[in-house]
Structures are given as C-alpha cells and as structure tokens.
Image (cartoon, rainbow, N blue to C red; front, side):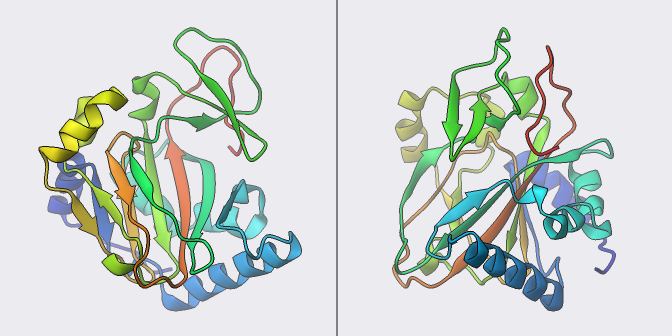
Length: 236
C-alpha cells in the first residue's frame, strides 16, 4: 500500500465534523484481494446470502490488513499511535438484502466476557458476540474506518451524517428526531477504495437502495482505551 499524506485541514475537519473521507486510500488490487477473501469466507461459512457478519479480525488476511502500514498511518493520524483494532464488521446491501438504518449513534463495544462494572450497560448479544455500552469517555477514544469494496453512490444506500453531532455526547434517543429536523444531513458517497473515517458518537443513518447493487463495506474499529475491571476486547 502507498504511503499517504494528509492535509491538515482534513484532520481538522474530522475533529469538527465527526467524519472524513480519504479518497482512493486503498489500491484497486488490494481491494480485489480483500473482496476475494471475504467472498471465499462467505462461501465457506455458508453466508453467501448474508447481509453481514462479525469477528473478521480473527482471520489472518483481515488482521494483516488492519495492521498494514497505510491503515496504521491513518489510525495514528486520526486517533493516536497506541490505538489497536478492536472490532470488525462486514456489511453488504444487495437486491436480496436491502434495508433502512435509522438515525443512531454507535454505542456498544464487543467484549470477551461479562464483568459487571459501574457505568457499563446494558449488555446484549449480537450474532453470538457479547456487547456492552460503555461510558462516553471510552467511545470518544474510538474511530471507525469504513473501507469501501464497491462504489457507493447516494442511490445505493450511502451513509448519512449530521455534522458535528458527536460533540453532543450520548444523545437521548427521544431527542434524535428533533436534532435531525433541525439539521441538514450530509450524504457521504464513496468510491471503491475510499475510506470513510467516523466517530462512533456521530449521528448517522442510511437509506434503502433505490438502485440496489453490491455495497460491500469492511468496518474496522480502533481504540486507544484501556478497559477496566478485567473487561477485554473480543477481537483485540
């Protein structure tokens, strides 16, 4: 992967807006390798029709990519050098699996086992993986990288953001409709090889595709936070 250079304005915009886009961050050949591996994984695990799955960091190819030079440069620039990959999710909207995602914040982290800890909760299980909602201070030490394996125009369910909404901390779900009504959401289109970087606390959503095609996204989360009381990241 090529070494990237980042405009200082892009980093400043990320801190202000809660998201940023690095265009053509991953060369086409490497995107093809990622896509081929994921499709093989889907077929081997009988998940070919699945809209997504988790825990890909346990696969050698994905873990090597998560620690590759360019990805590490992005993470170091937009978070810090101590951050490590802690969660992976794969999404794919297709004509057979096309859904609307309501406005929300990403409030949960994946952990190895339940250890009741003040400020952590509620607990939940997603596709067999244990999750818990941590304090906002932990979420503020996380960034998410959405690596686009396909082009994603607005017609194909591109992600939408509310500028700067991550600065509001944990938002009461009852207040979200009013915040959306008072804002001008931005539809963040992406091309194959682009990486969208986002803060978990930014309000985001995506519409159903009106021209559905594959919209494959590898979602990697990085954190520099130390979890307390014996809690540990599932995929770290």
